[in-house]
Image 1 (tube, rainbow, N blue to C red):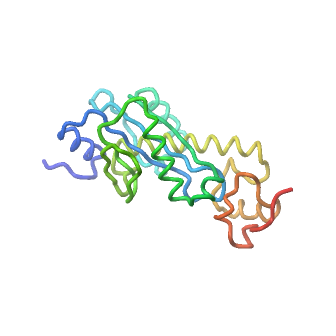
Image 2 (cartoon, rainbow, N blue to C red; image 1 turned 180 degrees about the vertical axis):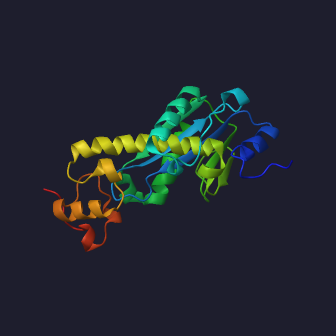
Image 3 (cartoon, one colour; image 1 turned 30 degrees about the vertical axis):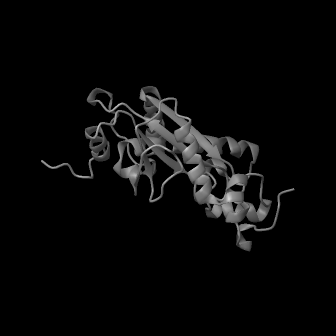
Length: 213
């Protein structure tokens, strides 16, 4: 039977057939929020049958506890993984797309094992010297990218939960910096804090121009 692209190892098997040994998936989380960093993870997982982790998927399709369980397994079994972040100041300075690409590049280049090929989630390429393949919706279609999305999501969620303690009142532990009504209302009441992305908050109803004392 011909393999279908709905098989999450379709792309990996294609590269293995071409002679690749180490395949890295790289993905990001946090492009859309009003606050906090963008986070990217790169991971190389073993692809033999006995090492495969069941349940890896787009992190957004998984419940929190399942993401955390899978993230622990991914870290345990990975040949190599790296998680990087670019904060709101970098995002405001160079824009979110460039910050995302920079974050992904750093995550790949800091892997302790050099991959033979890198799968990048999205429709763009990153500035690396290694062979790469862009896969649209790769977090749902590629095992390696799905694993990276889980690592990045669990890391960023934990970080934003900590930021809730540093900057109370905004609800970061609940919405993780996204532009929910709770968050918008908090900005109107409290103003902006240090981790808000100024370039993302342009509507006066979002609290634009009001800095927190």
